[in-house]
Image 1 (cartoon, rainbow, N blue to C red):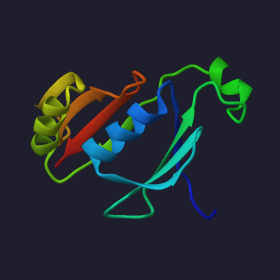
Image 2 (image 1 turned 90 degrees about the horizontal axis):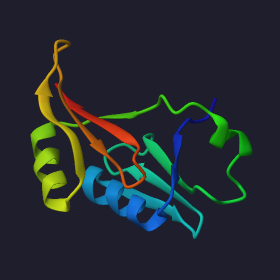
Image 3 (image 1 turned 90 degrees about the vertical axis):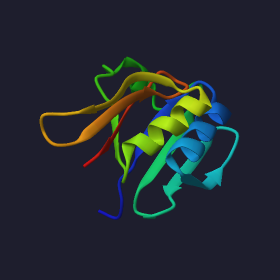
Length: 121
Protein backbone atom coordinates (compact mmCIF):
# COMPACT_ATOMS: atom_id res chain seq x y z
CA UNK A 1 0.00 0.00 0.00
CA UNK A 2 1.38 3.40 -0.96
CA UNK A 3 -1.06 5.74 0.79
CA UNK A 4 -4.59 6.15 2.05
CA UNK A 5 -6.78 9.22 2.43
CA UNK A 6 -10.42 10.13 2.87
CA UNK A 7 -12.53 11.91 0.26
CA UNK A 8 -15.33 14.16 1.46
CA UNK A 9 -18.25 14.86 -0.86
CA UNK A 10 -18.60 18.63 -1.13
CA UNK A 11 -21.75 20.48 -2.10
CA UNK A 12 -19.70 23.70 -2.24
CA UNK A 13 -16.10 22.94 -3.18
CA UNK A 14 -14.77 26.47 -2.57
CA UNK A 15 -16.38 26.80 0.88
CA UNK A 16 -15.09 23.34 1.81
CA UNK A 17 -11.57 24.15 0.67
CA UNK A 18 -11.61 27.40 2.67
CA UNK A 19 -12.84 25.55 5.79
CA UNK A 20 -10.06 22.95 5.79
CA UNK A 21 -7.29 25.37 4.75
CA UNK A 22 -8.18 28.16 7.19
CA UNK A 23 -9.37 26.16 10.20
CA UNK A 24 -7.11 23.11 10.08
CA UNK A 25 -4.11 24.51 8.17
CA UNK A 26 -4.22 22.12 5.25
CA UNK A 27 -2.38 23.16 2.09
CA UNK A 28 -3.84 22.80 -1.39
CA UNK A 29 -1.79 20.25 -3.32
CA UNK A 30 -4.11 19.98 -6.34
CA UNK A 31 -7.08 22.15 -7.26
CA UNK A 32 -9.62 21.69 -10.05
CA UNK A 33 -13.27 22.55 -10.59
CA UNK A 34 -14.37 19.13 -9.28
CA UNK A 35 -11.63 17.86 -6.93
CA UNK A 36 -9.24 19.39 -4.38
CA UNK A 37 -6.39 17.43 -2.81
CA UNK A 38 -5.20 18.77 0.54
CA UNK A 39 -2.13 17.87 2.59
CA UNK A 40 -1.17 18.77 6.12
CA UNK A 41 1.40 21.53 6.39
CA UNK A 42 3.05 19.62 9.25
CA UNK A 43 2.95 16.11 7.77
CA UNK A 44 2.52 15.50 4.02
CA UNK A 45 1.40 11.92 4.75
CA UNK A 46 -1.86 13.35 6.12
CA UNK A 47 -4.09 13.90 3.11
CA UNK A 48 -7.71 14.78 2.46
CA UNK A 49 -9.69 14.89 -0.77
CA UNK A 50 -12.70 17.08 -1.48
CA UNK A 51 -14.84 15.95 -4.40
CA UNK A 52 -17.82 17.78 -5.85
CA UNK A 53 -20.86 15.80 -4.76
CA UNK A 54 -22.51 15.90 -8.19
CA UNK A 55 -19.43 15.11 -10.28
CA UNK A 56 -19.44 12.11 -12.64
CA UNK A 57 -16.19 10.79 -11.10
CA UNK A 58 -17.95 10.22 -7.77
CA UNK A 59 -18.77 6.50 -7.51
CA UNK A 60 -22.55 6.00 -7.78
CA UNK A 61 -22.55 3.70 -4.74
CA UNK A 62 -21.30 6.49 -2.47
CA UNK A 63 -24.71 8.18 -2.44
CA UNK A 64 -26.34 4.94 -1.30
CA UNK A 65 -24.05 4.35 1.67
CA UNK A 66 -24.96 4.91 5.29
CA UNK A 67 -23.15 7.99 6.58
CA UNK A 68 -22.13 6.95 10.10
CA UNK A 69 -18.71 8.48 9.48
CA UNK A 70 -16.83 11.40 10.98
CA UNK A 71 -13.29 12.68 10.69
CA UNK A 72 -10.99 13.04 13.71
CA UNK A 73 -8.19 15.58 13.57
CA UNK A 74 -5.70 15.63 16.46
CA UNK A 75 -4.12 19.03 17.11
CA UNK A 76 -1.74 20.48 19.69
CA UNK A 77 -4.36 22.73 21.34
CA UNK A 78 -8.09 22.34 20.65
CA UNK A 79 -8.82 25.66 22.40
CA UNK A 80 -6.83 27.55 19.74
CA UNK A 81 -8.86 25.88 17.00
CA UNK A 82 -12.08 26.59 18.92
CA UNK A 83 -11.35 30.33 18.94
CA UNK A 84 -10.47 30.24 15.24
CA UNK A 85 -13.69 28.33 14.46
CA UNK A 86 -15.80 30.87 16.36
CA UNK A 87 -14.15 33.75 14.48
CA UNK A 88 -14.81 32.00 11.15
CA UNK A 89 -18.48 31.42 11.97
CA UNK A 90 -18.06 27.63 11.84
CA UNK A 91 -21.03 25.65 13.18
CA UNK A 92 -19.87 24.32 16.54
CA UNK A 93 -21.70 21.18 17.59
CA UNK A 94 -19.84 20.75 20.90
CA UNK A 95 -17.31 23.16 22.46
CA UNK A 96 -14.04 21.76 23.83
CA UNK A 97 -14.97 19.15 26.42
CA UNK A 98 -12.66 16.98 28.56
CA UNK A 99 -13.46 13.37 27.65
CA UNK A 100 -13.21 10.30 29.89
CA UNK A 101 -10.45 8.85 27.67
CA UNK A 102 -8.09 11.79 28.32
CA UNK A 103 -8.55 14.02 25.29
CA UNK A 104 -10.11 17.44 25.06
CA UNK A 105 -12.60 17.24 22.16
CA UNK A 106 -14.74 19.63 20.17
CA UNK A 107 -17.15 18.81 17.37
CA UNK A 108 -17.78 21.08 14.39
CA UNK A 109 -19.61 20.78 11.10
CA UNK A 110 -17.89 21.49 7.80
CA UNK A 111 -19.82 23.39 5.08
CA UNK A 112 -21.33 20.08 3.88
CA UNK A 113 -22.64 19.06 7.30
CA UNK A 114 -19.82 16.53 7.74
CA UNK A 115 -18.91 16.14 11.44
CA UNK A 116 -15.30 16.85 12.39
CA UNK A 117 -13.95 15.76 15.79
CA UNK A 118 -11.04 18.04 16.71
CA UNK A 119 -9.12 16.71 19.71
CA UNK A 120 -5.98 17.32 21.72
CA UNK A 121 -4.34 15.49 24.62
